[in-house]
Image (cartoon, rainbow, N blue to C red; front, side):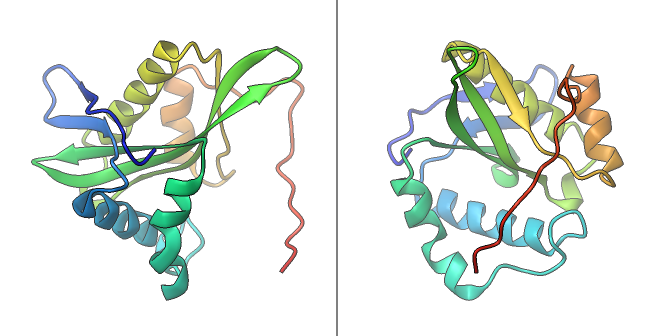
Length: 169
């Protein structure tokens, strides 16, 4: 979404602002790369930072992806959280859905309502787009994230699903 509209979602009585990222904005692009790099290095990510080559083309790749939607959460004008999402379509249900692919709050901003504000903004924006379902994957050992998601009415799929992969490289 390179030319993202200037949509800001503010939470009452909180200093957190959540907005759609502008991938053409250097400050937004730098914040996205910084946060994704920190997420990748985090134990709940993959435990190691992003490769330099990935960081160099990440924003261009996201900007070219027609279904990418990136949200930034800010405290005092500093990006402290992000969600990288992708618009999809349910062939069984015949409706649009939004998958939260990456959801991260920097360590210094955790337990301050940033994740909840980010999630609320995503859900509000999804409703405004007539999205009928929001999906995500969560690690089985990420108890903090599961607690947030449960508190916001997310639940395990029925029937339960497994997240599988085939690493081609």
